[in-house]
View 1 (spheres, rainbow, N blue to C red):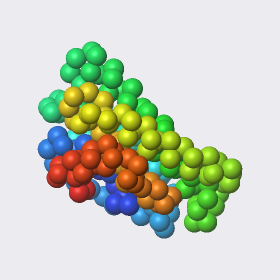
View 2 (cartoon, rainbow, N blue to C red):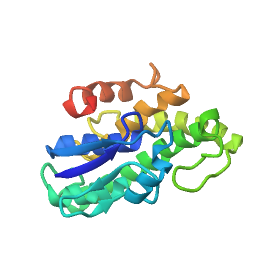
View 3 (cartoon, rainbow, N blue to C red):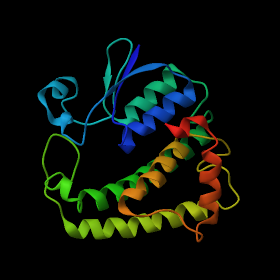
Length: 210
């Protein structure tokens, strides 16, 4: 059985939960308590020396420690439904938009949160190494989040999905980013009608409740 090292409140492992649900992949789950620093303890370091979640242990013992690797593995091991595209053009477009959802969305939110939250003092980046907060990056992150919502709203005008004409990993990443923005007190508003319509449609998918 596949084992997912998860944290119910963190955005990155949520991407994996949705991915596995969309593909119908059964798995065991081990919760890692990020709030109390379990990821930095020796027991978890023995599992994942990067001290991050998600981590996924495959049936044959391979440990994958980031969304890119987990997604690539799941798509190859469980090819249907295809969430990374089927044609060369689809694969390229989905890869491009998924990267933008990560860089312009999730990274912007993390920049704002990790450089401002008192609980994350000296933890401005995830992982085993401590980094000090830079308040100016928090300010920039908030501006980037606003731009991200504008990007999504413009992209989704007349469209049902982020990348191609069907659901893909880019939609998963975008949903997680939009929902996670609440931690920096940002959410779509009436000025984002296309984004709100898309998010409401995504909510009809059972995986999105995970």
